[in-house]
Amino acid sequence: MKATARPRRGAPPRGEASARDRILATANELFYSEGIRAIGVDTVVARSGVSKTSLYRLFESKDALIAAFAAERDRLFWEWWDRIEEQHADDPRALLDALLTELAERIGRPGFRGCPFLNLTMEFPDKSHPGRVVARNNKEEMRARLAAIAAKLGAADPNRIASQLALLINGASVTGLVAEQVDLKDVLIDAARKLLA
View (cartoon, rainbow, N blue to C red):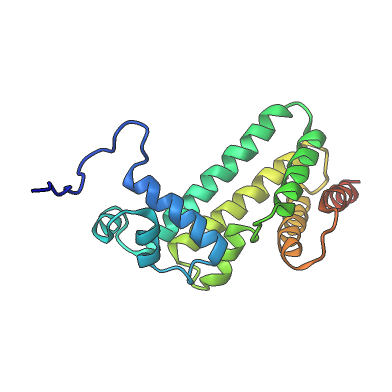
């Protein structure tokens, strides 16, 4: 008689992703590439190889999963930003140029589907949606960090400049989705320098 395999319980073997990590990685890929509303929990379950019971044990609802997806995207974004900031800690102009250059390169990559935070706010008009709250906080933090850079560059009104830079960055994300391939790096850096002149 052939033994039947029992579902594994407990922590995964060393080196194997946890159920939570597999669910989040799957949701991250699918939500970003196909849209959050287009992907149901059943699709996340099927692609992640995790049971629906496990998903709902880890995330009480799809909204909780969306918030976790947004929080992970937020964490990765600031990890990226902090790495660049460390490289240019003493030169705010080089920091801004590096941030804009890398953002433009991200926008130009195959598979780019826009800013995940802007996408989320478009899909969920309710301002209190937990994922949208993460998205709003990401954009507010970006403006605050841009204001700090603008202040170091001697801008008379760093908050206004930060809002204008954020508008350029968000606009570049949308432009990357709908326009013919353009050299966004040069356009972004030139526009930022003109704002700061």
